[in-house]
Amino acid sequence: MSADTSSLFSSFQYGPLTLSNRIVMAPMTRNFSPNGVPTDQVVEYYRRRSESGVGLIITEGTTVNHAAASGYPDVPAFHGEESLAGWKKVVDAVHSVGGKIAPQLWHVGNTRRLGAEPNADVPGYGPMEKLKDGRKIVHGMTRDDIREVVEAFAQAARDAKEIGCDAIELHGAHGYLIDQFFWEGTNTRDDEYGGSMENRGRFAVEIISAVRAAVGPEYPIIFRFSQWKQQDYTARLAPTPELLEAFLAPLVEAGVDIFHCSQRRFWEPEFEGSDLNLAGWTRKITGKPCITVGSVGLDGEFLEFMVKTDKVAQTANIDDLLVRLAANEFDLVAVGRALIVDPEWADKVREGRFSEILPFSREALKTLA
Image (cartoon, rainbow, N blue to C red; front, side, top):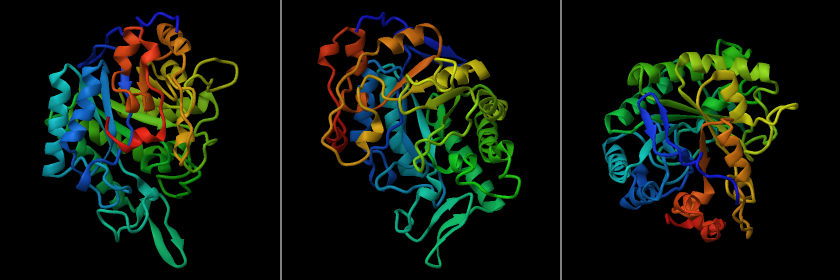
């Protein structure tokens, strides 16, 4: 790698959020929190990465206080005395080594399957009801359901601020609940939450507005979104810059401070005729700080590792990333799998120890290194 890394290690400030550098740990589900409670092992997992130079930790997805919010075993909750006490330990540990942290607040929506803990008899919740063999497997959300989930997000944000988190992130990407309302493929409602792009964004706007009211005018709200979905990797919420602007403008007005723009490969242009990626376009349209993400530092994209495989992702050159960052295409860089396998990734890049960076394989998912 030959590009200057100084842009990656310059400080960043937006409102009350001041970071020592531009490196963000991307949120990645790890399934190491039995009964939804982060353990001391989880505390050390995040502390090590902050100690080794990550500017901002965005935690794995943490579920809000709704019966259908969780869909996977041993994911952490962001509600209840025990879980919040566990997160307080994480926050204090990250702060003790000079780091900053934001929990990602999450509701899985209709991806939840019957039998999933902790409420095995509760189906998934989503924009639309879904039946299979005469059995309801997804509950179509009523207006009362929507209000309940909106308040659950607001309460989680209140709690995050109360225990000392530096910001919060709302998970509006990858085909989970908020994104299910965004996408025409999963939202065919005929009320005020369906139809036009404005209507399909109404649920997110209500969540953002409620969170803003809960945390006050200055507390940073990060919003993660993606064009692609788990159900369709080629899906596009906004296939043109004009539609992307129509999608983003209400979210900005509702109170988003920073956008986290999820791509499978950060280097891919978002629209024809421009080299800008999704974060670059989002920054250009909104003027808000943006986080880029997508296979940073590795030569294989993450979807290749969502199934059982013997593949190994080797370390990859980040010169192009550094050039784009220095040119202010985006403001922050989220690193995912490279930080799962190598907690010292940031220090190694800063010190030019590129040959020491560890490759990634699925074996890394079995432990909290």
